[in-house]
Length: 170
Image (tube, rainbow, N blue to C red; front, side):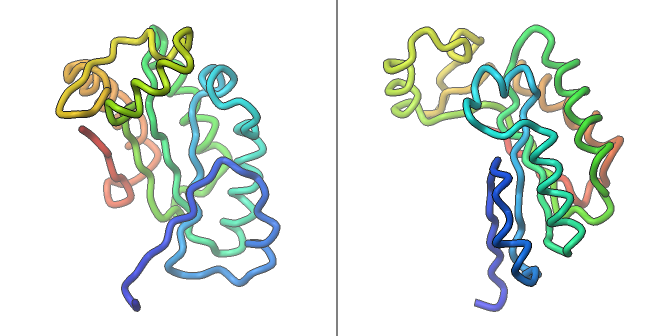
């Protein structure tokens, strides 16, 4: 499949094997990021942002195509400041010119999966946010989703060009 692309999406910092391998042009190593405040509460045992950026930098310097995934955007009262800080932290440490792509999307889950997880973790703070079911998917109300996407898109566009940006919406 000469036109195929592969994406390795991770939060892991275990990139030694990739560093020992010549970079593949059509293999994107994509790192997922959420603000520190959300990561501490929701991403138990995931490496901190600084360590992910260290791994990303090593791969970027070795020629691996790199993707940034700001997905899911999670709502909280001060989400704007948290995401502004996250973008500033990330783009202070990487070269946006050599990025392959950046994607952005709000929290969303299929209804059936959401119900199972909510049953297992009824006290989870994430599920107390303003979620709504629409067309078999649980996510934020359309107005809130649009507000969050607009804000984060505007912030991201101060760091990258439109050609590298891939929004994911419901």
